[in-house]
Image 1: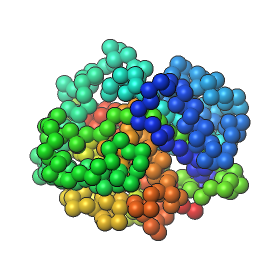
Image 2: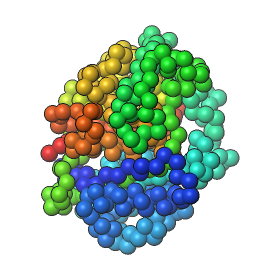
Image 3: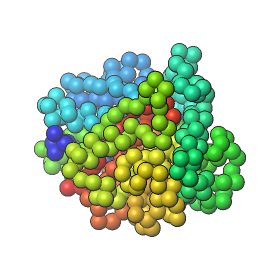
Length: 387
């Protein structure tokens, strides 16, 4: 199924604060940007995918607003930040089954301009359920991730300094990204000196909040080979859910254990074949756990793996988030899956910034966790191959 699906177009909106722009407008702008990158037009699109950030009735509202009048397949799956990785998986299946030939995936939101804070701009907070372990919405997610970090420290001896290395690596990359919200390189000492927000997480352990969005265009192989773009194939994908299981929850791993295993099995490779990964970095601890869950290091060794620059492109074993990630670059609408996909494809194409481009690699990985790692969540993993 995967061999039939290629990424033809990508686009990441350059704005980080969209004063005066509507969410629908941003969806349209990223759609047109990705289609232009692919060398396609709106009239070529026959499959459309978006999440709950899309206004109104989602796929129906945006199809009319954007002008998609040839659709024969739509998908409004919503799983938080991982939604768009699931969309890639679902679009590939739809293409393989002949349900569509050109699939457009869009994401956009304006939590800053709309003063939506840590929630989607259109969400009614009063109607959201409470999460387990006294972490309630709209309470800040950092409290839940603070629990994950503290438990990881208790079980495995992970240190605040090791968490800080994740932020340091992100800042080393962000300095080369002119659109990154935070472009200054920071040190471990500066991370630890930043204000404590949810013990043991400091301010610089937390991701940025931004407006903006992004889009991808996936196409059938026959179409991809007619376009003047580098060929990037979807080699494997996986998705999985984890929840509280009636109170037996284990804090230091995520659903990524299963979504990652499925993606690697489908691609027919192992973590040793990956030298670039876009890992969800809502907080520094999120990356530590994912490194372990996806098999890049042994359980409990994520902090050791991240330390001493091992995530910095050109320095360590695994370059991570060479655009600066959610910690420094972009986390649009508090759902950072789209930038993860875009940068993974950039790396596959060889189009990342020259100072962070990983040389001579065949496969890249993107992974995201939607909702909260400390309670129920959905993980999505995708593996791309440069052909």
